[in-house]
Image (cartoon, rainbow, N blue to C red; front, side):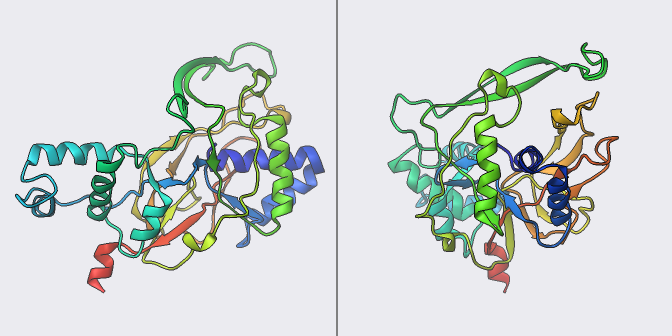
Length: 317
């Protein structure tokens, strides 16, 4: 459940519940400085994306982790193997983030992971309800795209492959939302939950339930810092003001079926993945237009971001 897809489906829910005028009002609000709501991508319970931080210089790595009295007793090969495994991690526990956010860098995160790994090799992985439970699994599926005008397979892009993710029945995800009116947002999200998220809902995919976490303490994620990390898929009409370290991927969205478009595909755009880190970001432009011949079609990419202080910046200050 990625944020930009969820934003789009919430707009579709508004159209189904309240009509096209309601969607137009929401899009106008998104194009202002005060969006009605912004969502993170759904994350494993208690976890945040692993931040995309500046790489650890080799000399610093040797000095900190390859010394005889270091955590690997001078074994450089073992130290590098651990660092390689660390670089593949997708998530960081929110508690670790809270403890390190005032001076965060690759070295401090790696050191903390090594310490926690000694007690629990799955310390930075999503928690399972039991040892037998499967948190998620993925496989590649083949698809046909049907031309809505002719009923046949589209000539361009009609055959394609995509990776599907299936979650265990006991999997729990966290969704972070900033909303002017939480009740109005939950009404739209409830409609998405009742009708299914994403594609192939008619076959039972994308169904979920949700509840507001009244025990959540937002102060753990609030605060100031030198940089911000996004919990959402991020893109904008003009990314020239973006400065930082980020993971880039190409995103090809699809049009809501109720619009009746013959070609359901939007143009591909460049996006930054969850966990990307920025020193500066655009002030606006998070509603992408021009992705489809129908000018009504948009992609909402407003991000939920959280602040932290990069350790090198703190030292320089």
